[in-house]
Structures are given as structure tokens and as C-alpha cells.
Length: 219
Ligand code: E4P
Image (cartoon, rainbow, N blue to C red; front, side, top):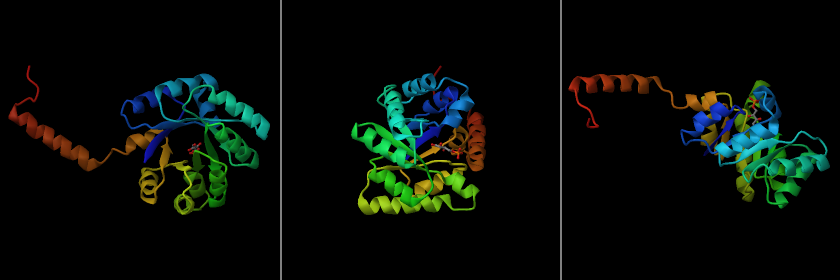
């Protein structure tokens, strides 16, 4: 399973990229606004740091303007995935840009039928939003499982990019139901390594090691 980071904060991206765990980055207009940075500049910077797909979202709402914006964003680098909303205009844009050989991430997916449409439009990624479904009392994880079943039934190559991840349990459950990619805020990815027994065990090992007076490296 691939790990994408859901942020436009350069320092956080650099820090996590150094772990070797980051396969890509997703952004959206809200994350860009939160960063306070120029959209094109920040996407270009991210695309330099992370070689994997970097999602940059169009903001037009009609297909012709979306296509033009998508082509402009794709000029930033070969690793740009143009992000389009799950509307008819977005799907039309997805078909056009995918046929041109560009990566497209279809976002704001909240149903299996929407995911089916995105796959038929040639999307590289479909982004179902788990947390926002959970927020309204629905089961976001069930959607991931439904999409997995449908895509496998027809051998669709569109990757399931589970988005709106709010907890470490979401990450584990995504892996269990077969999401291809998760995108999560840096804090969630950092939390994945944590376990109190790991910390306790390490403290005990280091205390015992200190008693031996030995070192592994000479000098
Ligand atoms: C990613 O592509 C989405 O934009 C993001 O995961 C949305 O997360 P949120 O629902 O926590 O805003």
C-alpha cells in the first residue's frame, strides 16, 4: 500500500520524505489556503521533493476551463496528478487529460457508483473520503470495500486512494480492505509507529545495555 501525505506544508513533507515512506502528496484548495503560499510555487516545490504523484486540484467548474487548468498544472512536472471533482465536468476533464497521458485524481467521491464512473473515465486515482462519510453517520470504510469489489470485478486499473483519513485505525482498515493508497495528514502518519510497549521495551534494553559498558562502534 502506498502512503501519500495530505498537506501543502513543505517542512512536514520534507521531514516525512526523509523517512523513505512517502510515495506521493495530495493537496486541495483548502490545504493550499491554509499554507498561505502561492499555489503554483508550492506545488512545484512539493513536486521537486517527492518524485511520486503530487495532486494539484483544478478550481474551474466547467469542463473547458478545467481542462485548460489541468494542462497548466501538468506543466509543473511529470509527477503532477491533476485533481478534478466528481462532477460530469470533472469526469469529462478526466477522460480528456487521461487520453493525453496525464495522471488524474478524481476527488470528492462518496459513492461506489461515482467511483465506477471515475474508472470508466480513465482516472489514475479515485479519492473516496472516509472521514467525511463517518462524520454524517455513514461508514466510510464500507465504501472502500465496495469500490475494491467493483474494481476487481472488472480489472479496472484506477487506484483506490483512500482520503479524509482521520485515525490510525482508518489506515489499518484501509490496508485490510485493500485500498491501493492512503493519503493522511502528517500527524496520522507519524502516529503509525507509536506503541507504548515499543517505548517501554526500548527503555529496558537501553538500560541493560548501559550496564554492560560496551559500545558497538569503536572509538
Ligand atoms: C485528499 O485528497 C482530501 O482532500 C483530504 O483527504 C480531505 O480530508 P478532510 O476530509 O479531512 O478535509
